[in-house]
Image 1 (cartoon, rainbow, N blue to C red):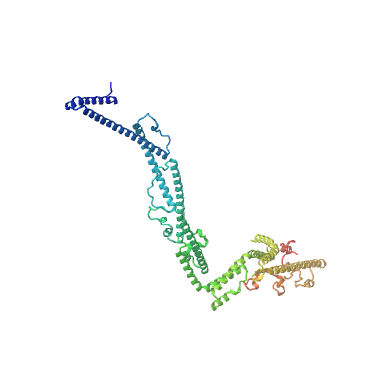
Image 2 (cartoon, one colour):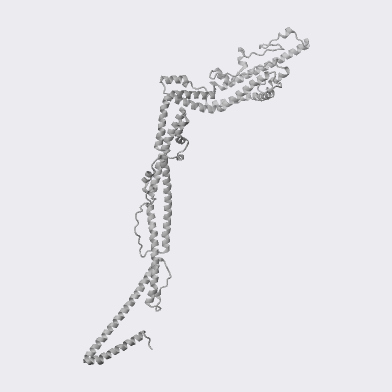
Length: 594
């Protein structure tokens, strides 16, 4: 039984209907009309022709529809292949290559969603490419300095849209981002340095950086900071320009401050007045890179310090005479401490006369005195070691004087208060006195070495020190010889006394006991030999040893006379058992023992 709706059933119904209609036309309608057989054949031929035309038209339409479906399928497959190639997608199943398995509409229904999905993927990939390329072009423009308005970017249909290409663009973008960050940091560092320099110099920062590029000090946040090579070079040149200006201003301010400090010291300016410029006074002790205080090198600051220097120069000219006198007094004090004769050409009397007469500029005279002060300070430094040795020698001479006075004291061994202290002092003094000859010899050697190095004589208060020391040695030697003769005389007196006691008994003849006299003027009286006269004119050279201070008294500079006396002692006035202790500091190896 035929199924209703099947192609065979439809053809059967069509044939049945056509046959029924043809029979009705031939057997009834044409008969009733009376059509001839020829007319009937003609009409049947037309009817058959029209039916063929209708079938042919339908077949053509179906063929065209098939071709269109096939063409659509091929186009979709080509587009799919193109998108797959652009996206780099591989191994997607293609139903076209399967023959007889599926109809065209089925194949078309299968590939259409696939095409839509690939189109969405391509559209998303294109957006990614456009976004990356837009960022690349923007950053490239910022780096190159030609960042204008970026138009809409379009991609070619055949452009490579694979992930590999996208990764390449993204890698390039990251490198540009890193370069931008590095350049931005460098620009910020340069801008900060410019800000610090402008602060120190008191220069308008905004105007300075705007000369390089307006974006470096932008007021609107829409404009990004320019990081091009031109901007970096401009910032470097601006920094060098500011550093050069800082170097010039620093040196200028330093010179002005040094002049101000000299004037302060010269005129004894009070601390309250100096505090006004305490902020800039530290420039003298600082280096250029250490000066970071705002406006410290501004033109206003330099002008203020310069005005202060001009004011002090005017005050200095009015007080020049007073300053000359003051500096001359300082020079004399330095010379006194260093035992150097001051230059008489700038003495107080001469300086006052020259200033009053107007023959000499007070500034030149003051500069001359300053030069003398500097020279004396340098020479005093080179003489310091020898002066220290002289002080130690003079101290030893004082100890020798004290020891002699102590030895003359008949009650030095008494048990009174302070006796043990003086005894210890005497022991130390004997050790010091025994070192005097070596002190003098070493001092002479040091002095001669100093004279050889400086090619001039070492003068101590105007007298050559070597001459003083040689005279001291000679005088000391003469006095030691005098002491030795006196000791020999005393021994001879004791020997004569003992002989007389053995011959005449313990009571000597009054007439013979007073008849013995020495050629040198000492009394031969055994009971009371007279002490040599220190102040006699004939003993002035032998009884008094001249020290450098004694020479200072002779030339009248300091009016100080110091006489180191080593004259013989009165041995008879001292008990016999103590006479040996009088010279206990003259050991056999001592330079005082001959």
